[in-house]
Amino acid sequence: MRTTQQPIDNVLRPSDEVAEALAQGAPVVALESTIISHGLPQPRNLEVALELEEIVREAGAVPATIAVLDGVAHVGLDQRELKRIATESGLRKLGFRDLPAAAALKASGATTVSATSFLAARAGIRIFATGGLGGVHRGWTESQDESADLDMLSRTRITVVCAGVKSILDVPGTLQRLETREVSVAGFRTDEFPGFYLHTSGEPIDWRIETPAEAADIMRAQDALGGPETALIVANPVPVAEQLDPALHDRVLAEALAAADRERITGQAITPFLLEYLVRGTDGASLEANLAAVRGNVRIAGQIAASWSRGN
Ligand code: PSU
Ligand code: MN
Image (tube, rainbow, N blue to C red; front, top):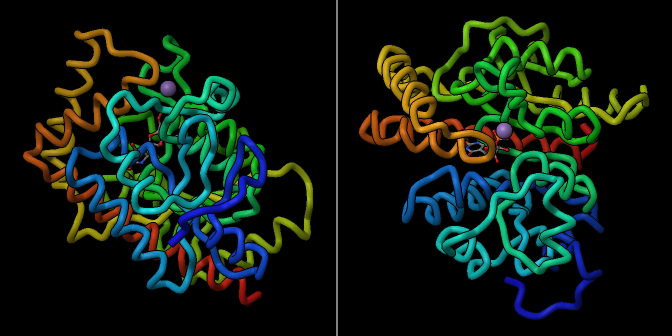
């Protein structure tokens, strides 16, 4: 565990363990922190943060949870820092665009997929695991609410293992945006795009892979081909046995969307609001499905990272 260290610079600081692993070409998996601070209830969130790191280690890779603490983007957190992310009140939710202000004003915050992807790639990490990506919200043609996650993935060379995009979103609309923005998508042992809490969204995907090694092969092909620095999304569904009951999902989600509308929740607040509503409205069942999805993604990401490092 890291105790003291010299900052590499003032804004981006890999932990000693992460820096060493990267220097040796050892497998590293980036993990985001918004899911911990804004996506999961306390005190479960801290247990989950620690468990996810353990799953990465079991796969033979080094975990690098990413967050901004007092203006410095940390790539790899120790236990005390993880605890800050899980428990500190008033922690911000930082997308990429928030990073310069957070650095200048010495603010602390959790990083979303957009900020985490950027910081991971900047630190030299190629693989990242999360729950569900952001995307275009329902009614997005009016609100213009399209998650910055999509834009970042269209210009960052990173592999994101996720259970699709959050089902609170306009899923077909999001898939269309991913196609337009040239983001590669492969289903991990599935022909259908996962539905975050649900095994499938019902939407087809064009490419299916069966093994972590095939994901690493696609990544090498991305590099060999060159072209725009786009991401690879490895879409890994929650197992049917661990998914949220689809009828319960649809019913509570409809209530959640109506409540968000009524209370005029918009912008950064909407995703946490809807996720929290689902947790309460399903008596915690959505939380279990969310966690099952994230655990599976982190495991596969660890395996892809190992294959990527081995070169096979
Ligand atoms: N995955 C989860 N829970 C989450 C998120 C992802 O299982 O809370 C977070 C990610 O950080 C993602 C963010 O970037 O939700 C999307 O927020 P928005 O829709 O405001 O872009
Ligand atoms: Mn948004």
